[in-house]
Length: 296
Length: 270
Picture (cartoon, rainbow over the protein chains, first blue to last red):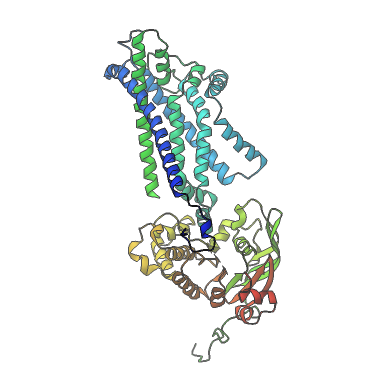
């Protein structure tokens, strides 16, 4: 037997290359199979929805209010309501979440209290959304008497997604190399100048990723808004933060509960609208993120 | 003015030692530094003279970096950092509440182990510090001057608006020096500035330091014995958190008083 190496113990290596190669190939095939299983299922579901709902889509569907008659029903109120909810929620949760993350990462002393806070923020991300709905109902709707309004919904949603934003923003801030902070502080920058000019721009792509994930969640959340008690039949769009409103997932949920078969198709059409709006929003965010990435 | 006699500044013996009367930029008395319960530098008495290059040498973990990062209070951001004893900068205690660390760092600049330019343009790297510190002169002029002093101007004159990260490691480190010089500091602290550079870049940095001699107080931490011997006026040897020996670089490297020093500088340890 000829050994491949030159050392004294070279003959002790049992390369077993054939089996290692087979295992490698099997692992690769398994990974690709699971990938296509996931993507395939998604496409089947999407295909089903498109097949069901495509025919019902149209300008009228987008611009009509809800109705008892399937042929006249539309999702205008829900679509506008969702956009109100998203914009308001983003306006509340992004500044609060990012500021909290900056405080915890850059300023907060490492005491038992801050560690306790940090642990709880991670845990909050795992609390079922319906619990936030109950909280919103008790605090915002009843106690603060904000009624079933845009601001109540947005505050509830903000509480729901804050843990996600805070956690993602903290990860992004922590990934900024300490040497960059050294550089800024070393030329006589204050903590604020260092954070604002260098740390935040460097962390911005990561922060935006967290924001995209969080906002995407707001699009789809139904349970908390159901608990708050948002109406389904809204005959006008909100014109202010105190106005009543409804959202796309709620409208879709309502339609799926109807016995009339045609409402099922309306629900499918509603889902298509929801997905398109979600995709468009994420597209904007991704473009924004890429621009901040190339700038730095 | 017409006196033909050589001035008193004429170097005859090469380097001035601690026996020569020079003002001290930093005076450490009984300085003890650590992290939590772990003591890194113990009961240190040391003076860093003005307008001299002082090298701090010693094996890894002897507290060199901790000491130099104390001199401009960069350790403030490490929560467990502890300090006892005194360290005066021009007669003022470094940790005196009346001393603003931001102002201190503006006067005591620092060049770090790994080149760490800002992810901005070359020009912005030099102008950012002066800008945020309210420099009222012409920022571009200041940048050009600083880049010239840092011996980098020739290489970047045509590409000031390009990203600093497109420069080579050695160029980035000289950019970091230019950034420090632009602040018009009194002192420049250098924490192993050449440890990540190739020999050519290292010799360029050393030439640069040589040109800054006389004008700035420089404290350099280095693992490179030859570097300490080549560029410094004074050398402090630390081991295990204790100052073993401090004196003229010539003396430390040719006639060390202690065996521990001799073993280290001749490469028998570390």
